[in-house]
Length: 106
Image (cartoon, rainbow, N blue to C red; front, side):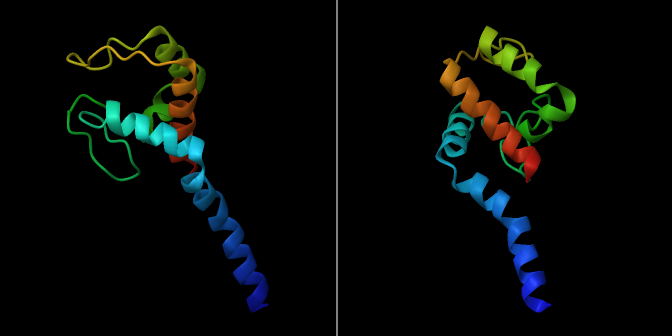
């Protein structure tokens, strides 16, 4: 019985650990840390430095993932009043969206 509980516990932890080790997710995380972290909270528990900049972990609660992707594709120029224009390649956008999605799964 103890073995079954241990295996079940490991299976619950593995998806979160896998997301943290995924190079694609790490790429998305690096992009948001370099481009967004000066205003936005980019992790699971940090607070946004700018009071009008939502934590990235909450974006999927506020906007459908398709809307987020479309905003990134068009170039986000207004998020909070002093937000700089953000332009990314399709590959970068996909990595950022996947990273934001990984936050929701953790």
